[in-house]
Length: 75
Length: 177
Image 1 (cartoon, chains in turn green, red):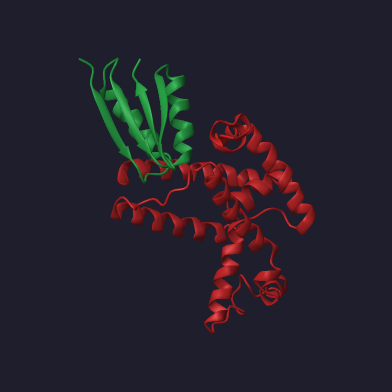
Image 2 (cartoon, chains in turn orange, brown):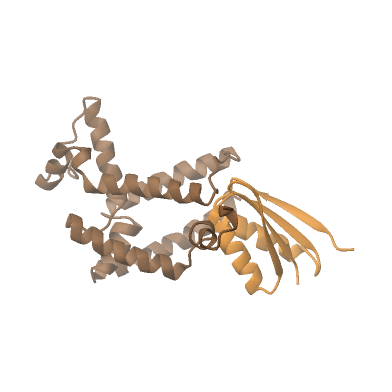
């Protein structure tokens, strides 16, 4: 069964959310989902950019003012 | 009208601009800055002046300090912050960034996550501030404006900035994550 992991990166600035997500994704299997919670607008750009380039499915959800969830499904 | 779903609102205010748009705008406005103030764009040198004005306000004197002892620096300090183009520009940057965040409804007051984060911020800020003054410029004044004015010093700065960034990144992932 595929699992879902939440990564709390609230209050973290670049490049920490990206590095944390990259490290976590390595531990997961294909089909697993990782939800990265961020409130740093640069991560809103570099996280989806990296994940899409790597071939994963990416969705962005605006949770609140200045708060987003980047949902990445490992390919 | 529902502004949130307006196509132009989404394009101009909500989603981030591309790096190319940013680069073109920065290039244009640094020319405007140079033409209007007579000096290339700089950011961190202004903070040294703010420090000097604060120190003067509490009765101190920086007049004999090497950095402030020359005529130009003295004239700037004596003219005051209201006549200092760089100060106005820095305030404009802060105000503009606030406006952009508000317009995208992306403004948020962030919590400090850990003591480590405070240590990293204070240490990083100190190193950047000290380095910028001892190197007579930060990544804007020395790197960006240096390269813009076709100065070799900007490229030399870039090489060592890169070396420092490599060391900094290693430290960041090792101690502060």
